[in-house]
Length: 341
Ligand SMILES: *Cc1c(COP(=O)(O)O)cnc(C)c1O
View 1 (cartoon, rainbow, N blue to C red):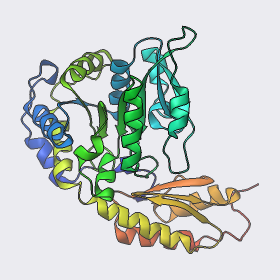
View 2 (view 1 turned 90 degrees about the vertical axis):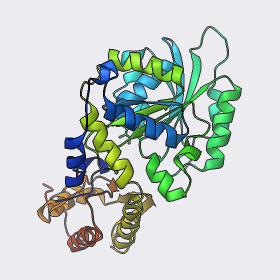
View 3 (view 1 turned 30 degrees about the vertical axis):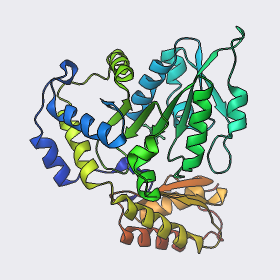
View 4 (view 1 turned 180 degrees about the vertical axis):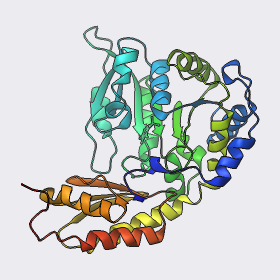
């Protein structure tokens, strides 16, 4: 199957499985796992942050960060369509008693600074206390402009807010922009990175921050059930991804461009955006079900909706892209939609 639904669907390569099998392990809740410790240290150093903490998921790492930055009755500012606000089960509210203050995005995905500033509440006891600005890079595949992050984090700090970066796909931004991981982490008090997306590890995220922040995040990780024992097996998979799968993200970006170009020449559909490893395509609504079934018959998985997100990754080759474009091309958008009664 050619799976374009997400970059989370990657399977560990045999080299990654070997690295995992070889990893020395210990009980990481006791701080005894050498593979986890080595991985945390390498990434912290590369990101220019003081310390790192290994998590089972990016959702948990974002939540632990929110719970360190914000207390009960505090609030954080985030994008209306940001993962940390919209796609994490309301965890900040459910488990942290923390209120979100969502902001509409500009078309480039950034949060307009005048809206951010207007949303920061003062000391008035009617309001929740605004404590944090949370940004996301990449956002829907788009790399945040560096000048923008600099201004946004400076604005937050001027108002006494902390800054968090959801960098689930920050390595895609690193490769696309040619900037270093440390440069893209600059201005943020905490950063969350995922290794289970395009980097191809089966499980694993890291939260980065200063020593005091990470010490507090470690407590919340335990509270949230994220303290893992011989987690070195998983960290070794992530470490392998860090060493072998970062530069190759450029292939995913090339494949996304190929896909956008290929689909751009199919009549009846509209390519809306293509950034890093994501392509957004508008298909005629009446044909969504029929197209999805047709593609499945061709061995291609897409979550087809009126605006469909297609994601390239480690397990999608340039040949696969050609096959996917050909399969969409074979579908007749002008005919009566199949599957409609
Ligand atoms: C995937 C993702 C996360 C974390 O998701 P998990 O599935 O919990 O690892 C966080 N933020 C963004 C932007 C993501 O895409």
